[in-house]
Image (cartoon, rainbow over all chains, first blue to last red; front, side):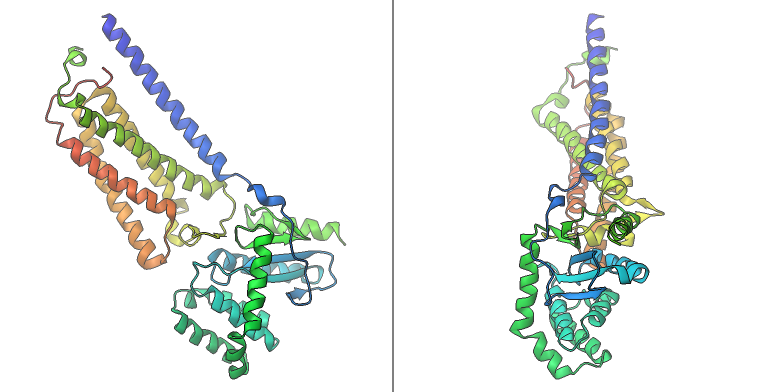
Length: 223
Length: 160
């Protein structure tokens, strides 16, 4: 009898412990997933300069710097969002694109070089848009095939192909990309895309609306 | 009631006890993993591409949710059920509890193999947490196979 009571008590403790463990695990995982990265208050290490790729209003008091990777799927999603924001607030905002090609995206560096080479002929943003629009097509290709794809984009943009190919492999373009990346590392970025609004790193947005609101607030605060 | 006094034979051997503990701990780890992915889906920031590899492509792919419900949530429920069955078997030693768990773990294994196929051949990207889940599903399947070989022996409580 006493044995049964002792056992019933042990069972109750066991199952109460299990319920507490499950509850604690769910709570802990939600806290962990919703955490805000510690580096969110980091500042932009290198100031915007004439060597940057800029669109929008260059005299705007609201400057959004994006560190991005042409092969990053999340960057493609933000590309569409930025396009929408630019359509709405284009004249009140200066957008800066900086390269941060991730090593595990095999064609990201080549894509950055292609955009840079197009930029030498004044069509950086056209190539930028084309690369993101068609990311699904070239992202899985070998370097050689991706090169052919990028060349076809250059043709579609009426670029001088010989010059495009030369520029794409030039040290100048590669150094510019490496400088961008280095600036990103110094600014403490740990993922792409990472945004800096007026020099201050934005925490990862929890929704599109949240991202747009942050930018609208900055625009309203800097008329 | 006398069942709890039955001297445990194979059930209380260190190996068998170890297998059940392993089953409970591993299924709980699976629950943590899947719950984290589910919480990321609902409460996490929009996923970017982390500097060192990443789940971005997998977790924003259309295969990551069915009817708006993240597949990770199905995984969390699966691991929770399996974990509770593991604890129930630990508690009662009833072989039918284990048989029920053993009927579920092949489903977990098949689901994991399907997700692994999607990651490698369709999405062409691997997600760390998804690979952990695949490993856990495989281990749980193997553990139930090993445990089922023991359940012909009359069960008794492992609490004693």
